[in-house]
Image (cartoon, rainbow, N blue to C red; front, side, top):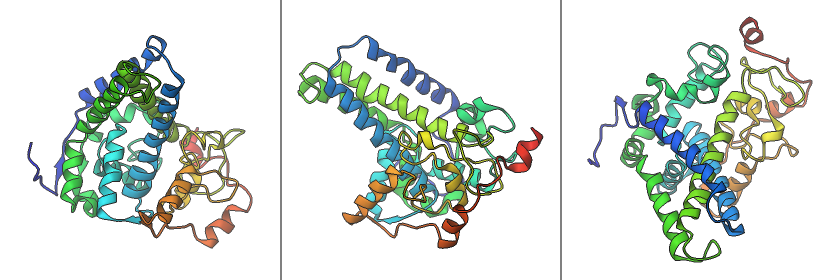
Length: 310
């Protein structure tokens, strides 16, 4: 395995076939919670693991690597990338290139993961299985590709979850952290597979439920953004603030997606703690004019030409 990789061009890492197998295994093995020994510490471990994973992709892959919504050191940048890779959401450059394309082309035929043209399943997870979405265009994220360690991690990201799985098993088997020793398999099922599966479901839901649906009882449009993005308040806790999706599309560079005090954004609260510890800084904010705009009447129920004539 080479530790010196090109920083330009197209980088291939995980094939669509491997991704299909990986996602299938995570979801199938998570069903093991019905068959393995249970302890309450295992449930706590699964919940902690869930929120760590959600923060990894929302605070790390999304707000930092895709939108550069705050600043940090090179060391902590790499730790964020490792955390996200450990959560099973691929490498930081892959995330950034595809998500930036999503924002440039939101809800148009060029948008890789809009549900408008190919349906809900495509927006939910199907877009991941298209070959053109499997690779990383390093030239589209030169700000990240200039760091060799990120290029290497982006190429070999799939090894990190295996390390996390092994450590989880060993802790469960040889320590009493989860209530007793000898719980390696239970720890792997609850704290790794079940936790990862739930975090995947939260991630997939953000894009599929945050686009393509007209505003109604459960989703709202506070801003006119030129696309169909909506806020989904009921999901704000489970997604750690990612479901304030219409807000995010109005000001993608902000470190917070919950723009107002009543819009709970746990990712932003974690970032504020990290800022107090000196690990991150310069958290970008939505402008006063944007906040004022959002306090006016709600935006139209739909966008993108009434969802392409629906």
